[in-house]
Image (cartoon, rainbow, N blue to C red; front, top):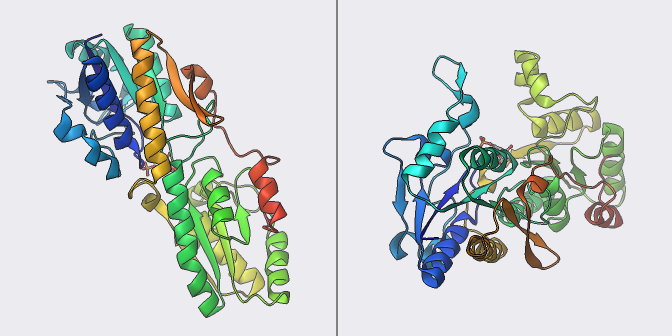
Length: 361
Ligand code: F6P
């Protein structure tokens, strides 16, 4: 091994730069390899000339740890196997990406991604016969075979801090505050932030709710002397009758104007049904940026070092993973078998129930 490549793919998150720094520091510092940072995920390999830079202390030094986002850039558009063209049709450009990898003269590639990106990178590696090691990142924490993915801890911190900010104003105005958080198809962010931030109600796609149950919880709180409530809702939560809110949107301009998103749907319906004064906050991409939490920096560093060691040992088609306080590695395919969603009978759901938090069920 003389020269390895590294790219970030899919949605960004906090902690990516600590991985890039760790890969550079260990590969260059310990093994003397050259590390090529590929720009904007696979888009950099599609471009001609290929868009990539040799990493050095200036671009990948330890001060990078502090920065959110990715110094390499990323994209979650342009699956090279079904590349969207301007006229709306799709073509297979995987051969060009593989050619881009060859043009860089790389001996191995470290791909940092979520399930979609890792699936694409793995198919490219198989087709192109190149050596791939993967590192899991996603604020959604929905990759299989790892207890944690980079970005999750910082997203939870941001969502928790939003509840910390909402609580005093909720109490001052006797309001029900609804906070909508990301998570794609999983409720991990809502569940952890809901516990950490003292939510009264946590709504996640893995547990079906009813407004009657939420109203009962709000009434109980009032009876107990509480004048406010905090409700956290994951973006993938559906309407009470199980419809996806995006399909409600698709259902016509009226539904769209009425609700906006699931947070607004919950807030609007709760106000209508219970008479409570509600306010809705949609946290959005604030959860993706920001200064990485120490845990994401530590995990990113551990993942980066282990990924380089895997290359040195000639172990490929593996993903680094966090398991029982240590870094391990698993077949990439085990991580991308489908979204790892919240276990409705798992520890954190039990914890929340133990605290008296309602899931609206
Ligand atoms: O997968 C990460 C994520 O932030 C999800 O939580 C969210 O649904 C989605 O990406 C947003 O994607 P985009 O950045 O394309 O708006």
